[in-house]
Amino acid sequence: SQTIHQWPATLVQPVGSPLSLECTVEGTSNPNLYWYRQAAGRGLQLLFYSVGIGQISSEVPQNLSASRPQDRQFILSSKKLLLSDSGFYLCAWSVWGELPGSAIYFGEGSWLTVV
Amino acid sequence: GEDVEQSLFLSVREGDSSVINCTYTDSSSTYLYWYKQEPGAGLQLLTYIFSNMDMKQDQRLTVLLNKKDKHLSLRIADTQTGDSAIYFCAVLLSGGYNKLIFGAGTRLAVHP
Image (cartoon, rainbow over all chains, first blue to last red; front, side):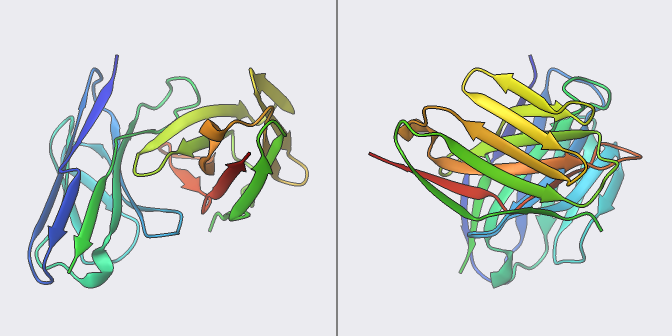
């Protein structure tokens, strides 16, 4: 069965420091990968998605970037964090054509607090 | 762009039924989903419905889809305290890769 791992689970970083959140998926090949952010009390915002190695699409302009160095690895980065980057970050995966209707499956999330 | 809207809060008594509503704008959405998020955790896929269906029942969960009005609802029968969570509606955009657009989530509070 497929599993998704995301780390670190919790992170407290000072303003201006770099960020690296990592996500790996097991049990599937060539998944679509996603980074979502959930700000406090708000819904989910799609930040990045990737349909293959090295292929990254950004949904919103921001202080963050994403990379996919391997088929099942997705990394969210920042060179200099802002206070507004605080939130709950969720990695997710899907495989087109698989039931149910290519639903997206989420990791457990990473809490980022920028101080 | 595509928009998905939900009411933000719902409070019900334990044992009653809960109904969480969602409206969306993309009439060509093929699949619609309900996810559950417990405190501090990721999202868990609860159920889904294909756009050519009006209703789907899965144990205590009933999903109703009114495609004409672009309205989706999730009914939880015999609501329990363990059902307290945030419930997200999501729709699959038509065309291209599988991109889901989420609502802001409805926080369900179940009280004795």
